[in-house]
Length: 126
Image (tube, rainbow, N blue to C red; front, side):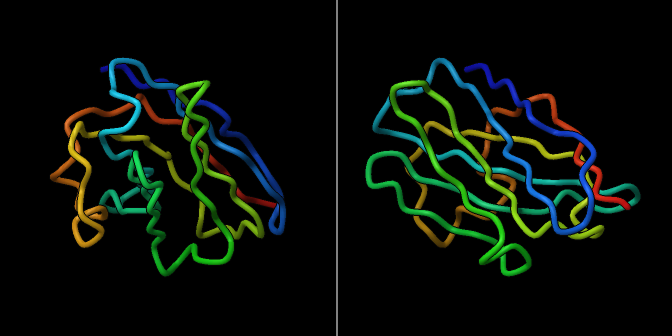
């Protein structure tokens, strides 16, 4: 499995960015993908996840109603649409994947993901 994240950059507070994670080696209807982020000096934290097959989603409370995870089956790509960005969203964002169709309760657990992308930096600053 290979994951390639892109789309990070510098954005003003209140702005938007869309991150992409192109993946290969995963079955189209089985698996789970997620976005995590890690700010300087902090632990990696869950942002959002999507389960293949039924497209069930989960978002962290800190990003609900601002970020949306989605998937394009045809393009083998998972997106993270980030709106109303705030400085606290500044971090390196990582996409992650597992071949398991995770139950909703475990989607946010870092330990279930076997494959990780290289990370893309998002900086929110005026």
